[in-house]
Image (cartoon, rainbow, N blue to C red; front, side, top):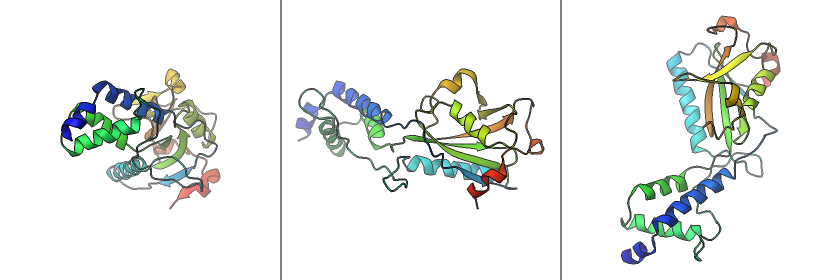
Length: 230
């Protein structure tokens, strides 16, 4: 059986399979969402280390749970599956090739970097959205969901709509290292910027060298009060 499976294995076909799976997943990315699924969190006087731990926990949950929505409106966990795709060109489907490679792994016949890459792609959760979390200097956090194909500019529009002072300029950045999203970056999609399935961004006023809690208020809490999580 091992020799038979090895004979069926074609490295070129494996690479083509990987490319097709990635292409299929990219094709599942969502466009502009009508519901941002807003949430507001207040970390209060929690120390910075505890806040970082909480944010890491939230990020880990996003990675485990796919962003696709079921017909009833809830989130579903995307379980690894063999997608039904078009034929590879020689009569075998992509699913057939993946099945063969699974057998090879089980029999310890084929263990190399290409197979490891195929396994990673096959078993990765399917994420079609980006959960963006914006942390403000007063330890409040604004969360919203965006389609993986939406441009980063949509994040700025989302934040602006929820600010107390909407006409004041601001920038968003990630860290470490510090990277400010502005200019040409805002024309790129969430997917292109690596924000799928999630990204934590930090808020700063554009007219200040450093933004602190006392430089608020930041969010329009009266409009957002129904979204505050306790």
